[in-house]
Length: 188
Length: 364
Picture 1 (cartoon, each protein chain N blue to C red):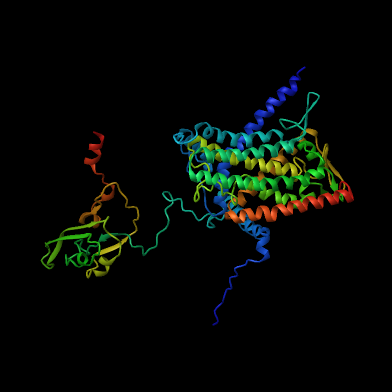
Picture 2 (cartoon, helix red, strand yellow):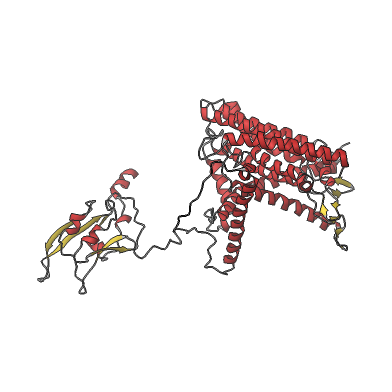
């Protein structure tokens, strides 16, 4: 198939030298946008055709933008059917992590069939670059990044997710913690 | 002997015009944001609220006003304090005083006296406007120079060059209309535009002077220093002449720009769009070109004419904001080339053709 070739002329020619026709063309386009959008706003106001959006804006805090179902969000640790951790503390994710944000302290598993389990499993969110290598490396499918959570900003410098949080056993979000000693000293 | 009715009417007219202009200019800060947002498929400012009541961002102008008033009003220590304070005042004064000669409606008869709807019914209306339009250059130049800053000085030089260049074209494009109407008085100018050709085309300036109207608009927008001619004050890239101003002083420059939008819209309506006139509407009702009439009481006619003037101004404001959010900025050489090599010869040509037509055919 022959490729379409566009010739770009340096001299725009008399049509653009006069300037008015091109101005009117541009004005016509923006004018059309204005009236089409106003018409859609009016229809939406009366609850008609609400699926046609008059603006591309998402009103963010109230109306968050829908995220893709394959988004690489924050991590979580999976559990087996009996509720025990899948993680066997093989240290592959800690080894592969390019940001050095996963820290595992292995311990002997209470289950006699399993050799090891992590006594501590912490992820430093502020170091994490969300590359997803830990998920790739895990042989047990124990760590996943499928939590569709994107608002993880906080006022503290150590947003560290503990094992309990990663397993979903606690709702205490690490990024909502303040650093009380600093703020207390400021008050003084 | 002072005519107390006329005096009272003048005071009332002044108050109404000031309230009208200030109110519309305040509203325009909101209109410009919202219109540009809708044009660009956005929503625009809608967060300012009073007790959770938002009404599509209509409180935004109040929020802006509070912000500007409470900001620090800083005069740079290295500036010329007197001129630095004077510059925004001159700019504001020059755009506000020209409303004195704009007729915002038809003359109304009150207590046996005909009261025209302009504050100063003087017979040099257009000359007055051009004279005070020329004064606006001083605001820009003084603001740039008195700040004692290289960048504001350069912007002031750019701005004065632009405004003086386009003032020539502005005046010449209006002179064509002036020759046809044969008067400088704004009210008489509107009356000159009554009547019809072939019984149905209104004798408006835009049909008498299409080229004049086409040349007036870019020249007026350039006088107002708005996009696409906003070289002197482009706030985001190259710094403008009011860079050293803060708080309400910077707000006055911005506000003057919005007032001048209203003024240009009003002037265009009066000179080229037949002022308050509605086609086929005369003193006692509509006379249709296909025969027949629809008679209306006199106060209805007057009210309709006031509304018509308002709608013409509103349409021109819409158009100018449309231009501002559509076109990119001119380069300096393009600006000068457009002004001196295209608009000025065309304006002179327009004058020449108008003169020849007037001499050969008489007043059309």
